[in-house]
Length: 244
Image 1 (cartoon, rainbow, N blue to C red):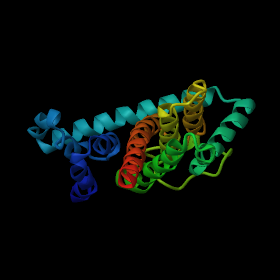
Image 2: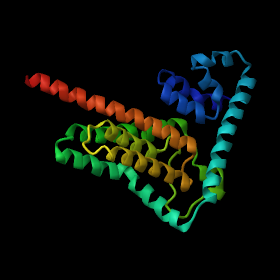
Image 3: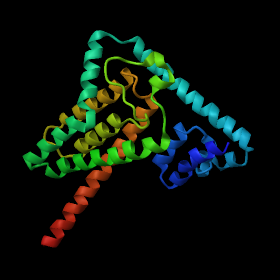
Image 4: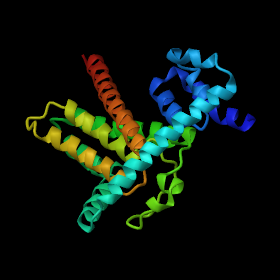
């Protein structure tokens, strides 16, 4: 009992951060303590601890079962051709490599230097918050550890925790910055979003992430992209003000 409470303590500490708390609520082993931090769920706090734990366990089990069902359905559509494409997309998303190249090009062109820098800031934010922070707070296991049938031989299996998806967060962080940039070629924006979505989907196809991992990673990425643009613009505006 005490072990469960200690494990869920981070959820209470995250009560000031809605997105982080949502991530913890969806994946933590004991949902009751997370729910108590949400104003809309104060009624749950009035339930006996045993009932709260039971409801929390049921909700987590429903989410996990839904995730696994979706992954099995995707696995049912697998083919050699798709294997090649999905491994390719997931490789492009490693450490935000593709997006770092895009950011470097935007900086080199100078016209969109601000947004090129913002891409690097967004990727860094997504990595620090998601991979270094939330993954180690939530501690959700990879789907192939929950269901060995989903184990793939197409790529090296990651040994880190599962939620949120780092590929999804960094990809959508960069794609968000690109969408906010005043590009002359507007068609580049939907291509950026489609590429981010393909990279995120590749993680499901390879069964190294749950659907909720990818969804929450994408939401985190969008938030990081918006924040990064605001940060870079604010710094540049302050710099111009000092020069004036």
